Image (cartoon, rainbow, N blue to C red; front, side, top):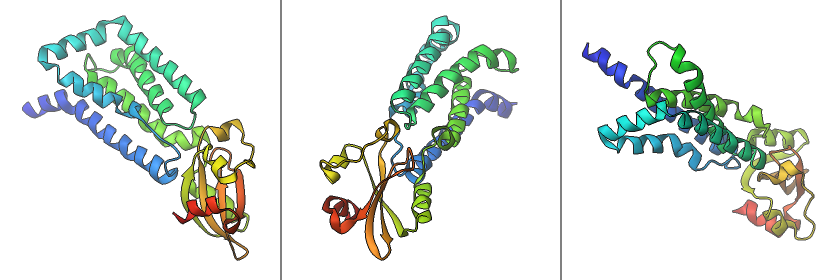
Length: 243
């Protein structure tokens, strides 16, 4: 009986912690392995655990009052999802290749889904904050998995494949740069960028083309090769590749 009581009381909390750990591992995989820091993430990913820690620090009476307000206030039920939906829309328009829009969407949708549907329809679900967090974290998990397909952003491996198809050899990723850094590399002869290309960084590769060492800059947003030139002709690009 004691064991069942423990899992009934803490099972969802432990599941939430496990899901958050999986989400963090996916974030590291997406940002570090797939996109080499082209995709970034900020404070939004820390909001659920930060709120949960602050909630724990309030003491038993404070937690009970907070939980009661959370579940009985129409303001918290409907305003919070609306605010996060608005944040997700803004970030999605202005910074479509950032993870923040997905996290904001998951927080809004998870909260709304719980209050509108799951709280009333799933037996045993009542007024526990861990239930909302499980909803949010499950949605975040699926958003992270689908991020490459939703955004259409090319990964480093896909960019390498583009270069290989055109005949380049010994292709190696070396760095990423921002759109503003193109001015430093090309001075007054900066290639014209599309709107989507301006909203993210660029991959920089070293490669060999017909026996000559070259530097290549490719946009993960469009898959377009921005520049493909000999490193001996561009000291700034050569410096980036060398370091």
